[in-house]
Length: 238
Image (cartoon, rainbow, N blue to C red; front, side, top):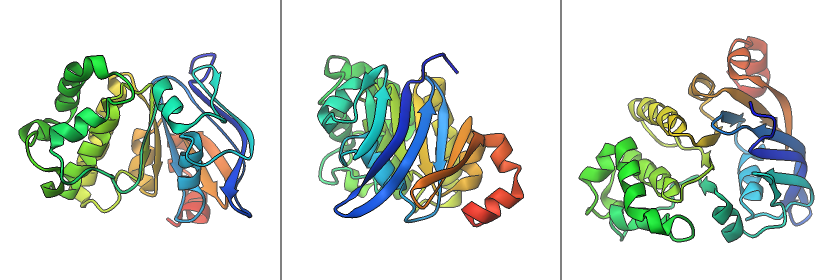
């Protein structure tokens, strides 16, 4: 890791109405690093992502991204800084083509380099090039997930949050997806991988955090967490 993290979250609290979801979480991600946030449904993973990307307002704590405080910034300003969130459920535009969906990814950031970035995305996801003129709604689930990630890459992220990217995919497509996540990191992009797929997330990540009931109960090298059977039984249901 470098001396200064790219993303530095300290004592973060967030929730909805009177419901407190995040209870003082702290996390850091270095430039070019893959960090996994793991946990079962309902423990606060989506709230954590939404708070980082400005959709949910932090109630307390700090979020530093690339040396600037962003906990009070709105989503467009956070995107403009280079923190890109690929949400759970893909959220593509089904009645637009693959190419049009990709172009929308550069609307807020990197518009002058749209053509170069599209070629970069096609280099990572060659299948999208084959379907560039096809309506996104006609793609398979795996192809739609590639498109969602590719759209995020069009904004030239410094850090990309991938929220449950393997959800609903077949085992074969999950294998392919995690291989492609490694290729994204090789291109210099830091990745915050928020997943329920514990085994493969730990294989690709450098470090991991275990989220349970709104707090991180464990963190460390992904290899060490993968080797701890008691930890996996207690917090990850394995």
